[in-house]
Amino acid sequence: MKYLIHVFILLFTICSCQSKKDNENYPIETVTLNLNKKLEFLFLDFIEIDTIIHLETKDSSLISAIQKLYFTSNYIYIFDRNQKQILQYKLNGEYVKKIGVNGGGPTEYIQPLDFCVSEKFNKIAVLEDIKRITVYDLNGKFKEKIKFPYFFNKIEFVSDKAFVFMAINSPKGHDNNNVYTGDSKGKILYSGLPIDDHLFGINIGLDNPITRFEDNINIMRAFDDTIYALKNNHITPNPSLRVI
Image (cartoon, rainbow, N blue to C red; front, top):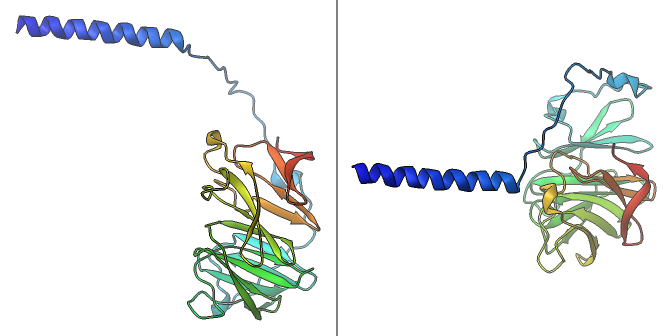
């Protein structure tokens, strides 16, 4: 028993010395926080409310949560991912109808992940969880289905016949990137914005990492203070925009 105690003490001493050496190699930095300094502001300090739209509530238009919405000249389109539906409203909030429906039919979509709307192209594209896009016109008339070889989880129009996507994990053979563009035939045209292992994924906490205004497409990533611009199938930091 005495020998066992001696062995234990020896091992404990060795481990303690090793831990001390490790701490010497990796010094601990001290960060001082001023908890008495408060920054108080209201959201309304940064915006001005122009109009409040009350959406009409019916049994056929119940909303669980709004993940994304688009305004056109005549309508509002709302994506409720929880209930797997896209709803169309007039600008005064009057409910019009659902765009498509979740199901396995030839004009239906399955497990929608995201959607995008283009008044310029008269199209609504629904990104599904089966490597596919289902496309409708702005009135909900079915147009086509497009198969892609990879899984994506965010989508936006680049042109009438091209899209930009974002992926959490890079598809094989495409240089470990976050952003891809593809055409209406399902062909990948471009990939860029390499995945940064320090960013823990591209859109954690971001429902809308891709934004489009007119012909300008901007891309954001969580934990990244740079906003990127996509133009002519090329991604560069947008010099006029930055997250602070």
